[in-house]
Length: 206
Image (cartoon, rainbow, N blue to C red; front, side, top):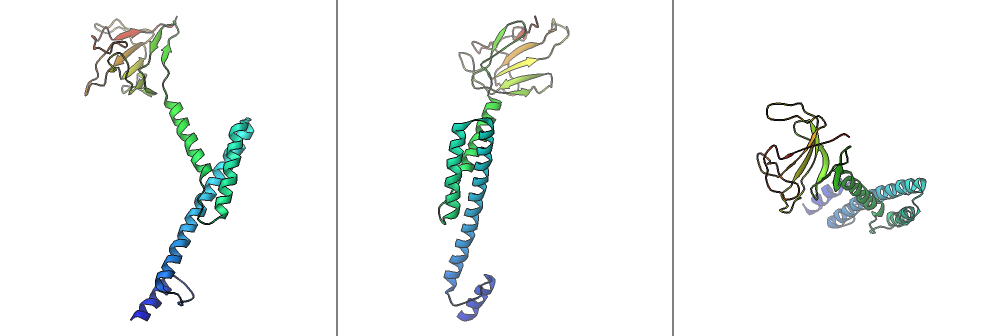
């Protein structure tokens, strides 16, 4: 039974010899699989580093290009040396992607309308994103005001007069807290709640 089991194990591994103990054969197979994964990772990293190097050379970013070149050398050496993991190029690519995503969503400190009025954006807010009613844009998830309760600034499209609303021909700005389910209008500097009328700041186009 021992020899039969040994034969089956060798057959499953598609090996040509059963001279080695079964445990050694399985160990070799695991090492081979690990080597394949490691080599694929190193090759991916080398490719990412080379692409970044070419891009930085094209843009004239010589400092970044030098770092990429060093990374390519390290990753290439790692790919040729069993048991030595690379990854410099891949890690630099991931870092650049994260930085780009962060920069794309980072809100400004304030916005200015065409009339020269400046409106502070809540600290730490991200955006711009479309408002839930589709009639403006907003910077959200901030913590502005002295009480840190100003969550959102909404820059809204023009509206005509309607009921008690005088209308805002150039649009308006509104600040809100994160009260759920209905956010409340707040003062952008104190963070305290205000009435609906007080919470609308008209924009000026001239």
